[in-house]
Length: 297
Image (cartoon, rainbow, N blue to C red):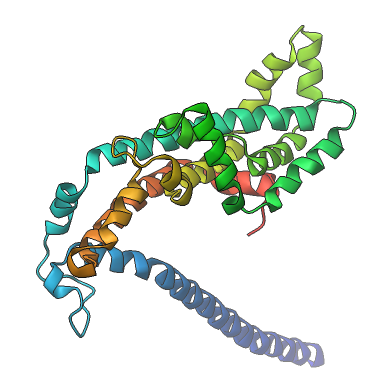
């Protein structure tokens, strides 16, 4: 009888402890979800406001109180943007520069990373350290030397001036080197036994196994080329090679210095869409690539 009473008391105490524990866990989970939803809302709200402003007429942009949902909805800003700038040409210029620059940077960074990660040669670590030091140099400092070099080569107002200087990336080499170091050397040794050379190993073994890191670098590279503004402003002044960020900057000085914000936001929407598509296409590899290469947020 005493044993039965003791079991009942134990069960009641366990139940009494379980209910508050579950309640606290549920409350903590709800708080985490609410916090994440708040963070998502803060991140998404500027993009929603950008889209909303692009769908408003000029007279409704600065009205009070502001309206997130435009009423009435109009596409005049997009048609007006196409009339003000050669939208198709500038979009094509940005796209071709971003795609070719991304592909070139992937190939060059991957070859350099393979040399630093998988080949043994004297002074390898010292050279790599010096290579990383270049990441400490601000990009603004390099604009004038790059401009002088491009002008000396006769590349002014050409795609080569926009693409070639950005092909050599210390960050891309570092990212891919960290990824290559995580790959086991058993594959290479087996390939060498079968008579493969370094190029075959690089192209058929290392590259396919490093797709997550390549996708991560591809997204960063595409974004860098696509959003680049200051350097193209020096070397691409003609309209036939002008990129989208430079063309959109001309909208900041309208009649009597009044900016037409609906057109600016329409151009911003068009600028954001390719980056969003690039990330969505590579998102399945993006996170794993960032983790394997050691990138910290």
